[in-house]
Amino acid sequence: MSVRSLNKVMLIGNLTRDPNLRFTPTGTAVCSFGIATNRAWTPSDGGEKQERVDFHNIVSWAKLAEICGQLLHKGDKVYLEGRIQTRDWKTEEGVEKRITEIIIDNMMLLSNGRGGAMGGNDQDGAGEDLGQTAPTPVSATTTRAKTKPAAKTDNEVEVVEDVSDDIPF
Image (cartoon, rainbow, N blue to C red; front, side):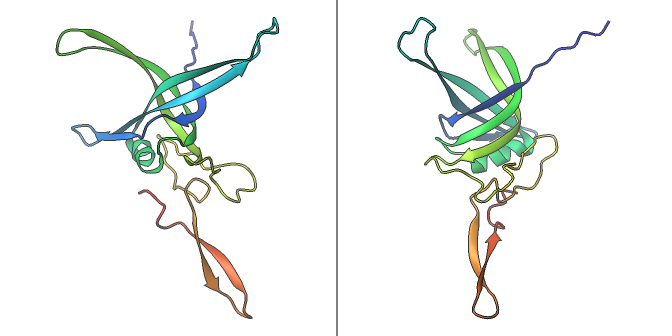
């Protein structure tokens, strides 16, 4: 008899620190950072509004790690998908340690640290997913797009997006 299980995490929160991009001895990129998620509620007995902040340790690998290291900064609002993983290890002094992390396989930058929404004129509301298993090119909806005017006949100016400098690979 097969027993099914699910380990899926979806978070929207703000980065609490700049990402730390490192490389394993074999050259695989790994990026770690923290995000904070907030929730507010009013008790059913009519008491004062309550608030809680939870802090999450986030880890990304391979191409997604490189993209996170380049695009994300402290204060940015991000959407993340991944799984929960708990690791145990011993320090050099023999002290046992445990950490719970979110290993992400998708990331979407929602805003920059100043609260500005990313994506500009994304009309259908669908941003570009940056998957770890099948990375896709970063589009203007995910990066801080630059525009430059291109000359057009009859004294008109057409705005053309130039995202060539924004592609992180």
